[in-house]
Length: 172
Image (cartoon, rainbow, N blue to C red; front, side):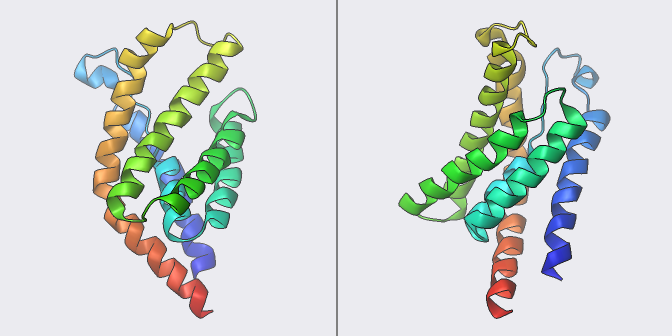
């Protein structure tokens, strides 16, 4: 059952990101802000914390490639950043306690790293012409607020789901 449940959950998160962008555009609020949901990244980081780093990095690779193929013009940005951030996250959790507040705070930091990493790579290859201060006010801060709201709502269900999955894997 776990073999199908986890991929289905992450496929749902992958689809939910695009549905969220379509159903709740920033123009709805008469704003020029860009809200970028990173629900999939949050799920991968919670999976890394509560199931295993190996699973987190593997799902980061798979869904990073899928994300690049579907949403970006350049293959490799998310393919590299998703598992890399999951790896950093797993190493930080070796030092820190694993509780829901620490995992949530580190997830926000991971999403911030993802956002800045994507911006810097896009800026490096001249796909974007936004300067960093404009980027921070238009996209970075609204994105972090949106993803913080998602983490507040999803942290406990993610924790329970991945702890149950870890128990099932240990029992099999």
